[in-house]
Length: 210
Image (cartoon, rainbow, N blue to C red; front, top):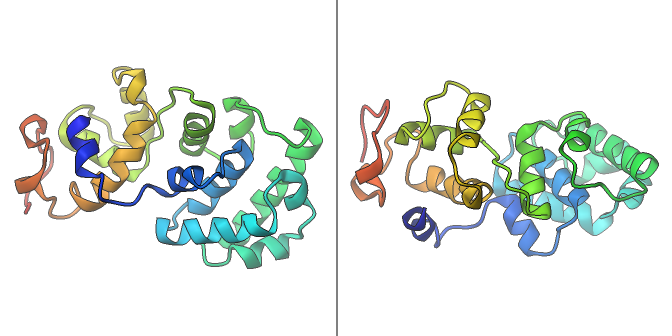
């Protein structure tokens, strides 16, 4: 992990970590940003989230917006119409069921439409400091390529990691493996010749590399 951490130091933080560093650290803000990020590049997620939060940051403020207002603010994200409805519904329920402040509770977060284990774990790890593992396509690909786990789906990878990854790396593995997977351990032609952890990698299913 120390080698991977050093390798990705020059690269931008993943969107939710970057937004947290900028002060967007409530459960609601991070959850909304994670919804925006679904199937959307970080380069879009960050400015779109900032634009929404400049208009409304709290559940009460977002509830006062119409779905059309939210849609206009996040329209650069993929599936923005569905996301606008999801965000509005989360804001309404946050106010009506939780007094306008979402708790650090996994079951509460996954009860919202559009929120799965990845977003819930990511939010709970970043905001609440819980040892939660968030598995996206990069984490899934890299740890399976290493041979650290053997799983066909991100859900199976999550179960495998939960059984062996030390808690101190639970949230960090997402923070470092996203840029690592984007820049070094890429889906096509990974940069194995300059990889800092090649000695520990089994190169599972790697047929060609740089």
